[in-house]
Image 1 (cartoon, rainbow, N blue to C red):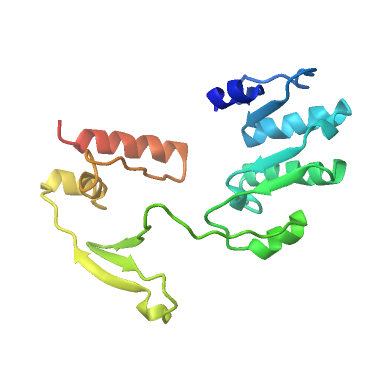
Image 2 (image 1 turned 180 degrees about the vertical axis):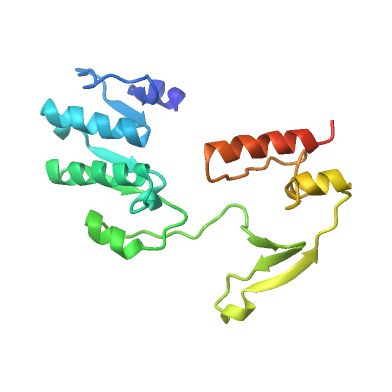
Length: 207
């Protein structure tokens, strides 16, 4: 994005960790794009309200909009930030994006927004569920619930007894079907769990 900023003559300012100043510097000649975490965005909105400068914010783009309504602290912070933005300056356009929204109509009402849905994917997405030692493919067609999962294959990996004890879910075996030819992304529920999984996979990967 920095190359685009130079070409179009605007500034990019990062608000994450210790970066970013409150309120942001006033620019006379060039406009700014603020790229912020949820927490920093909340502080940024607060500072613009306190300095009576919120009207300088023309557009707010929110990724991972499905976090709204979650019980986590970040979901509540996001909801609070957007509520303040809507009430304090109705001229700021809000664009929310998510690939996993279930309550789209509720969010449209909350944000007083219009819904745009696009199912285009440059790469076909296939979803599988692992249960025990078997892998099932998810059928996303409108079929009865009992036909949603279709047996794909039985998982067999060359694990010794020690490996099977440490990696009972065959995570490393599944990963080795993808890497090193392709990259792979593993989601974990917590930072601690992420560290534990990373250490496990690194210890079991062939050198």
